[in-house]
Length: 213
Image (cartoon, rainbow, N blue to C red; front, top):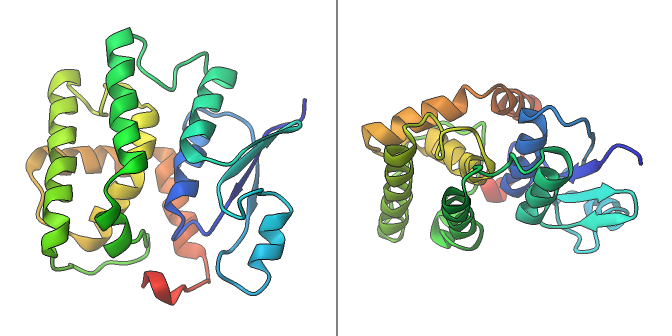
C-alpha cells in the first residue's frame, strides 16, 4: 500500500492540521503531505479533490479517507505505532483519551477568541470568557504532570500532547500569565523537534489571513 497522504492547511493557522502531522513526524512515520492554503480563491476546489467535508486535515491511506484529527491520530497509533500513541497502561490510556477528548470538543472560547497564529507575538488581555478555560487547561496540565512526572502529559509523548500543541502555540503567541508547571510543559513542547519544524515552516509561509491576525 502507498504511503499515507495527509492533507493539511496553512501551518501558521491550521490548529487541527498540526495535531496528526505532529504525531506522524514525531514518531518518524513516513507520509506524503499536501498543503492547501485556506480561505483563498480556489481553496474549496482544491479541498474537494481530497476532503469529503471540504475541511482539513484528512488522511488518505489506500481507499480509506479519515477526515478528523483525533480519528487520524487513533488510526496512526494503531496502524504504525503498535498503540504507542497512547500510554501503555489501561487506566492511563483512559485518562489520556479523556484529556484529548476534552480538547477535541471543548475550549470553544479559546479557539474562537485566540485562533492559532504561530507568527504572532502580542501580549493579549485575557477576556473574562477565557479565564475559566485557561484555568481548566492549567489544571489539566498540572494534574497530568504531577502524576506522570513529565516532561509530557503522560510521561512519554502521546496523542494527548498533540491535541494540546495548538494551545501551547496560542499561549506562546498571546503570552497570558501562567503558572510554573504550565510554563515548563510549554518549554518541553516547544523543544520537540517536530514542533520546531512546524513552527519554522509556519514562519516561512507567505499567506496572511486577516481573520486570524
